[in-house]
Image 1 (cartoon, rainbow, N blue to C red):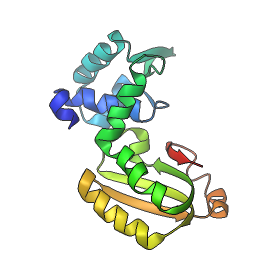
Image 2 (image 1 turned 180 degrees about the vertical axis):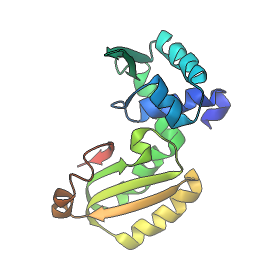
Image 3 (image 1 turned 90 degrees about the vertical axis):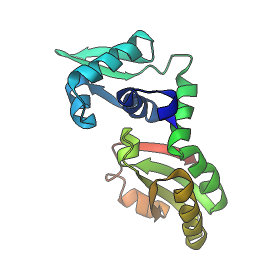
Image 4 (image 1 turned 120 degrees about the horizontal axis):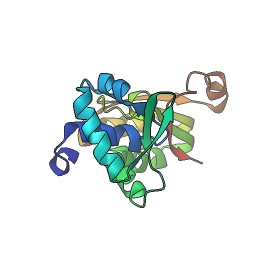
Length: 175
């Protein structure tokens, strides 16, 4: 869907990276390696997004680091478009709200890093109807054309595994 609005695949990857999880940051060579794109292609798009005010930069030593400009007036809208493109909004509406006592839901793995790998790792915390969850996941995977891998935990299990989820977590729902 986003490909029909934005013709640059590199720009789409950058928008996913920085707007899905605004805590993400990156520098030119790192982004080039991650995307499998030339540094020139990534540089051109980074410059365009920075000139538009959508990305901000700061220097860490001799390295220029980029991140989303959360103060930009279009930030909430762009983030919503990115989330809708990945189906995260449908995931929250269709799955989480109808499952029982969900205390917390977050995405981890590639999507939390802003990488569209085709596999969404979802962690749900609470007392959840697992049979109903599976039926919803089956339907949702067909709608968003992505695989969803779910981990259901109780609060005490989350506490034991909290170090596992310390990095790259994107909270999508919290009670």
